Length: 303
Image 1: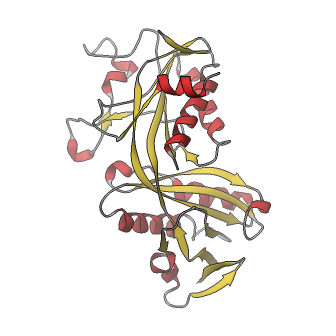
Image 2: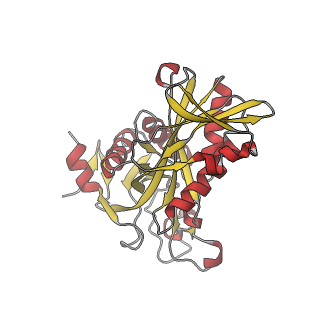
Image 3: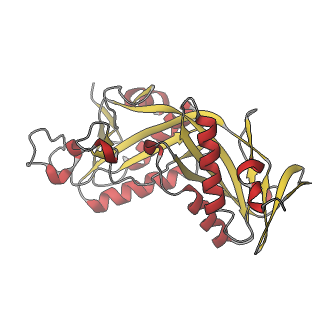
């Protein structure tokens, strides 16, 4: 039986997702523009494929939802699950907080991870005070107050981390760049209304593949699905009429969160003119521990 959603064909395939480690933090600031700068600064540049970290803004929250009564943003920082993931996460969190948040005026960071595992922010962030920082209890939490030239930076001392699922994805085969942008924007926007998930690339324009002619630079373009190579290579997998294939990559605190987010993206995009087919990226099971079948998602979440 052919799969479809709102009249749009859905390829009977799966995406590969993998186990990852995330830390969910709450950033607050005095003004909205400062909050946005800190949130986007600290979550930019996905780079888990290079053994580093990636992040995304889950959502913005009201002053009624933050410990200090200021505007807030929930952000997630992810690293690949490995033998030394704790040291990698601490190093990566430190870089993103120190260079992306601490340097933005009036910002504070609080733990937003439900977990019984924590790392001590005093070690890699608090010591930015060069020994002049101090610990205090504020808003019912243990925090470190770091003196800085603008005033002070406050961070909750213990930041939690937990295991989640990263790399869930959906692909949209579109008849133009315009329809691809519309579809990608709709998918990213609908994810902003969901808790516990992020899309670290937003609209990803350049899906990659594990094998490459140049391993020294890391993953390279997934040439099978590059529309400009159709007719130039014998093994192109781009259907007739397709001019652009955006990818939405999803990380979630649970496998269920990722699956639901994939369906929500598929459903909203299937209503957009110019979307010719919906699919997902996999690499024959070489990359991830989890296979998420689109057929199963449609059966589980479809009406």
